[in-house]
Length: 275
Image (cartoon, rainbow, N blue to C red):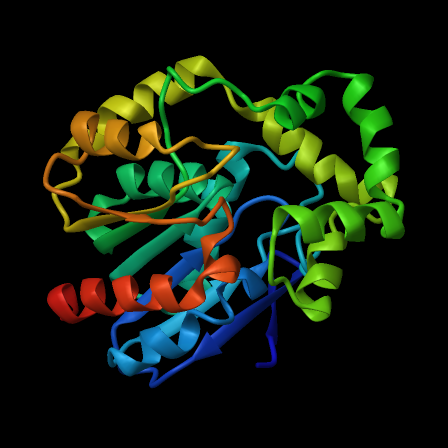
């Protein structure tokens, strides 16, 4: 599966796009340290449901060029609108993972008229969430910059990432590495993590309740970064009408670890709600 390339706001943006342009669009947003390739095994399921799959490398990730300004949570939300407009997308089924969830759910609250349905996987907006150990390091000035030097080492990055993402391919591994390979590129991750703040989280945690579109919540049972209880919190506090599906013996990166299980649930969601 080859990426396409376009220019948005004078920056190169790479993305996956498969399916009939006239079919309902499924917009897939990845997290950290991912790229559009996290969705590569999921695209065929989307196509089998009669939909069109579109997954960008968010600016600074994969092959896409970073913003000239700080890569904040808010700035990535603006990019989603710019990307959607550039590709002439109307209403979309929104599928999000990890930081793509914080970016996408915030965007959905700001643009509810553009969302047909939502699939959330291993992501949350909750003021009760505690940053995992690595996130705490990245959020700390000085310490975060020093830690990034280790991630820039390909051997160490490759070894550690293979442990945390069972089943990752060499191609995807290299794509994920792009955001870490230089001091400038890694600043994208530091900016993003440091832009997360409790005030914004509380605001959008409350706003999620106003989204009345169909929602499916998919979760790896053994997620070490966003633990399973947050799946149920997301349902109980924000999406009481959502269907929660827990995938046994899977971790955080379910799209790569257990794509067949994710695909089955994705097809169920799209077959029920596609228009």
